[in-house]
Image (cartoon, rainbow, N blue to C red; front, side):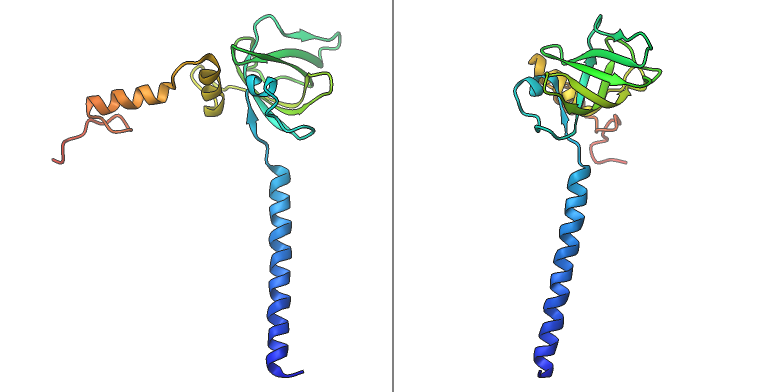
Length: 170
């Protein structure tokens, strides 16, 4: 084999190894990605069948039911338009309350219930994941609060951090 052919063979082997490595990395990343959906999107059939995803919204008031041992819980997650029944076995976060924001990770079951493997509750009075807040506003048909706040800030001559602009003077 000539040196030029040998060099070409090494280059092609290197490219094949790089392609295999990139393929393995992309598959690993794809298997760990979990998308967020609202109850309205679940009812519209937009969720992946058989795949894990996150469901977010509010815990529907009056929907929390505990089994005799207290470990099996049933509740509904709502976006104030639609609700999805959720089943979870385990301990709930201390901040879990009816009427408060929640994000649950898991899979849809054949009976239409969401089998949660993890429950995350919001951490203070004002926090809600941006995706959950956006989904709640869209489901209720309300305009986005962010766009209204941005318009108010622009009219007042303030930047996004809330500082009044000086009009170019320092």
